[in-house]
Image 1 (cartoon, helix red, strand yellow):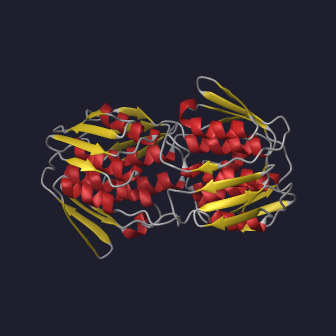
Image 2 (image 1 turned 90 degrees about the horizontal axis):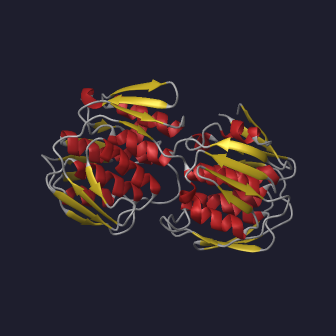
Image 3 (image 1 turned 180 degrees about the vertical axis):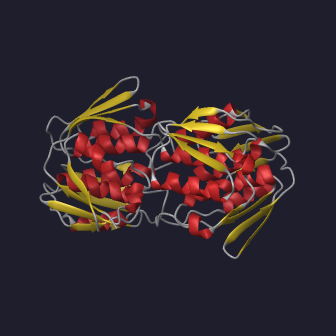
Length: 419
């Protein structure tokens, strides 16, 4: 099993291209099961989770071709199997996204209850209750969600809590339902909007994407299309933070700056000079130590939970005391314990972490516990004295494309070594 070795102390300086968004590519690939013709999806990131989703589509019988230039072609007309097995689903929670498309298009789906990151319970009841409202009959037995339906019927669905994958699953299912579906308290994330854009490109009738109320007028069929996945705002935010935490300057390009507003506010609070262009953002700390910032995670457009761990790393070496309040996932502080191994001064009280910034961290062996925790440990390693060795980096390969190569482009001392 590979490890990352990071030797800290280098001030980063340079420019990086941002890849397509993992959290948009995965639902879009699942939605490729819906049409009655092939689709071509561009700007697909080369990530372990994407490979897993492609394998899952292949297991279902869809014909998937990976083309040059970050493109994937999916022909769903060969889909013959409607079972998403545990051996694939356990490695990636996003596998549940095939549930809605399979039920809507084929009237049958057996999807294993998901696995994935150990960051708390992400219940599937909202997916199940929403599909039942659309007319599906669902049982949960033997570790599987077993759903059956004729043509789904439009319905009004009020989500109990904001759920990104729940919103996506129900939106996909509603596209082929008979009549109108209204989803209230819907997620507003850019990745949800991107999925709506893909569905619309195939002929779906969706209004309200980006608001908390989605209205979907069901259609008889969807057709093929060509679509480009939006850039990954979390990858962009992580590399901007890499520049800030090292006192350096990093520019990310091929991004949508408006998707980074909540992160850029906090980077400015930390003392960074932030410059924004049409499709690029630059952060320059001009050699200064960052100031501590307080963050509180909440659904988009508020501060993203997927950037919480990275800012915890920044607060660990910042001037002052920062508080981190996690409101989305109840078990997303395991990286804090690993940061302590590097010398961070962190006190955890319930869903709040109080971080007293220290002048320096010291390299040590640490273990990644989930995807974004991995990123926080890399960031901490960039400023720690000596070498930080990060184990279990298969987590990071789920969400960051060639992280060591990209960081080396801007001057980091980082390498991948066999375990």
